[in-house]
Amino acid sequence: MQLTESDVSYVRAVARKLVGEVDADDVAQDALLKAHAKRAQFEGRSQLRTWLYRITTNTAFALLRTRRRARIVLEEADAIDPAASPEKVLGREALEERVCRLVSELEPKYRDVIVLRYANEHTESEVAGALGLSVATVKIRAFRARTRLRELMAA
Image (cartoon, rainbow, N blue to C red; front, side, top):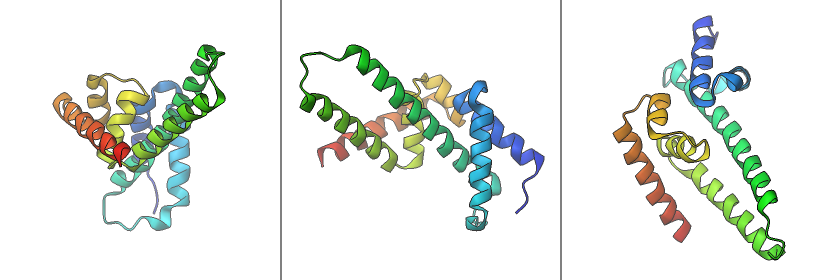
């Protein structure tokens, strides 16, 4: 499998839509390295660009999750209640980890919307543009994802 310049440009364009201009090169490079490392796993059941899109979105979402977690930790460090018990702080951290794990278990079409909408704090219009969907579809997928997360949390 040989990637063309057009494929590389496509990966960068997808990365730019998801994480912005500043981080697009890093995400694109990481995604292309992952694609190269996993090239033997590409079976040709889908188009090459579909496969590259999935790798790029997963790479971008991993970056966004990492940044979100770091921001949450910094915000919590600033807002820690000195009277809060260590058990309470650990309980909150465990809940956050569980939610992140459950989000990662969602179907990709729901996970993508949730991560962009809530973890990266994009508007519904921005999510629609990044994923090539209508705003109505983004709203429906976000609703279904939240419903599924509630079900998973209750289980």
